[in-house]
Length: 203
Image 1 (cartoon, rainbow, N blue to C red):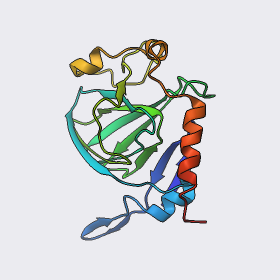
Image 2: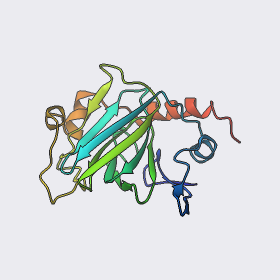
Image 3: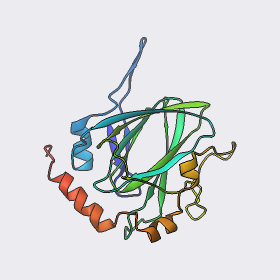
């Protein structure tokens, strides 16, 4: 298993080792020791979510107020693009994004740390997304950024009209969310990451 940090701190791409044979294939979708060595802290799994989406759907951009919710995303059926946006005010990459294709073919996973937001959209006619969450859902802690924010210019699929929930359609732009004071700061997130690093058990 290879785990590499992408262009935003706290975003990691996981590429598993796949063992094929005449019966099919086997792989580890998640390894706590490998994750902890690469990221610097363990991932406590409090909830596992599954979402199935038809082509054209755009889900996001979603975040959770600190202490937040880290997510470990996989796509066991179909293909989708997952886009992570740095919404930590004061971050050196604030407002920037990374986009990763996750699919049943590449078997990759994407980890995003607390304080970041993300969204995803199918690249196939139907895509199933399974993700590990570091905390359970709690009413009143979620916030949204409009995934079609023109200033962000995110690379969603353009060959079909986007289908959004009413909540995502009404979500503020990144600039509006900053003015509303709903975004975490870079310093607050660094404190949170330090708390998590203190829990590390793998040298």
